[in-house]
Amino acid sequence: MLSAQRDDDDSQYLLVAKLDNARNVSNILKAIHFKDIATVIASPLGLKVTVEDAKCVQANAFIQESIFHHYHIKEDQLAFKINLTVLLECLTIFGSSATTPSGNTTLKMCYAGYGCPLILMLEEDGVLTDCSLKTLEPDEVLDFDFSSANVVNKIIMKSECLKEVFSELDTTSEVLQILISPDQPYLQFSTFGNAGSTHSSFPKDSEMVESFLSNQTQTNRYKISLLKPSVKALNLSTRISIRTDSRGFLSLQYMIKTEDGQICFVEYYCAPDEEITDDPET
Amino acid sequence: MKFRGKIVDIVCIQQFTNIVGTISKLVKTCIMRITEDKVFFILSERIGDGGAQMWCELDQSHFFDEYAMDGVSAEANEIYLEVMPDLMLKALKTAHSAKWIKLKLTKKNTPCLTMEIDLPTGGPHQRQVVHDIPVNVVPRKHWPDYTEPEMPKFDVSITMPQLKLMKNVIDKMKNLSNYLSLSANRSGEMKLSVETDMVAVSTHFQNLLNPTWGNQDGCQILQSSQGQEEFATARIDIRKFAQFLNGQQVNPKRVICNIVHHRMVHFFLMHEDLSLQYFLPVISR
Image (cartoon, rainbow over all chains, first blue to last red):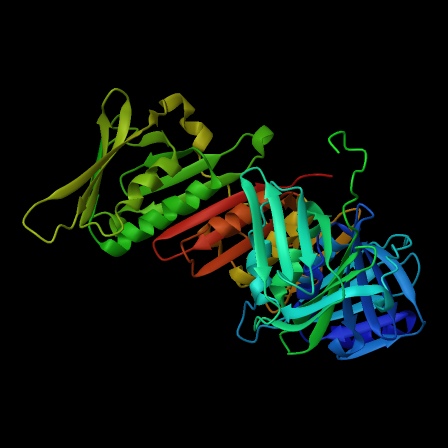
């Protein structure tokens, strides 16, 4: 009865999205959760949630409209900022894994427009939770101007083998160096920490590597602190695409399967660490 | 002053361990009160420390196979000890497969609750572990501080929903706010809500039972003119509530929550041979 009454009010909302399993959304959002505040852009295609740090790294999660079993938006684009930490606590309020055999949290998400809160209604086993999250004025998100025309190197591989590399990154090293080359060692990750350097190389004909396109040898360094959060996405993903463009910008795209077997994408962009040219020793 | 007790039944040993475990999650020190037919664990916090109260009652005859005590005097035949439940729990942890455990009040350098644990050996030898747990004997003039809290005249009495689901909800809510509004009405509905600058979250449980209390239990249903749907609300410390939910290891048959509107919440864990009451005062805005 309660939900029937609520359905009648849906006309006031610009965005209404329903989902049978809230974990499909919460798991993807966890993959980009490295800062409290996220920008949400809703369009008829679905939701794009963006998190940025230090103007150097950006993570985007795409939750396409087909992930929802009902998705209705009245405008071409709606944008707002939201506290992602709080949003995740709300989405997983009944626990982040299935607690009961029937075990799914259904979700209804509503947004009435600029200045209005994001309304979440969750239900599991007849227990209802209503959340009202304050939305904030949206900022411009960074444009990394990463176009496929400028891509120099592109590798698609299974995530599995990279999980080890990333979860055991030597965090005493300030940077992670990524080398991609048409010749040996093809793909190499290096760190330079207090206890020494590490190098992990992957041959291009490894069975983990599904596609290897390298036009020229590139060696770029990225701040480890900026790349470390991408481990969350990596751990959830089945495949990863690593691309670098002519400026050395890095794009990491992760393919993530939801519990219902649908495919979602999360991407990270990261700017290279600037070489310091006025180093007194050179 | 004398006290000695022996627990033989392994189920009772485990149950006793679980109770001490539950209490150790709630409080650092508490009072162990020993009377002829019951053992109590009592906490009464000062208002300044949060004002929580706990009252746990164990039926001596259910747990102990041998039980002998001599109180302070013939007319005050009771013993009040200040104990650290955590230390008791550590000792009891070695007793999970014990043949028996003995509890004794002893005088070493300081008064101690000595716990002798007889462990199985599989041979003719005896293997014993002895723990001396320092305690303070509470002088008689302080006894009145630890009298049984009065059963409040609550506005709503309701059985708690499935504790597991509730624990999840509270664990998430505690990351959002320090305070929880716990409300319930007499139509079997319970509501947990938190509200901060960023977010308002409220979880609704339905189809719960509203127990009726007979006057013979010393509790009364407050007769009031308010409607059945009207909610009684108490704003409490969410961390203490989470501690209570997460700490309980006794798997009670039933947990009852009594709310005195804007005054306090009273939780009542009921099991066959023990009961645990926990009182949380309201925190005003």
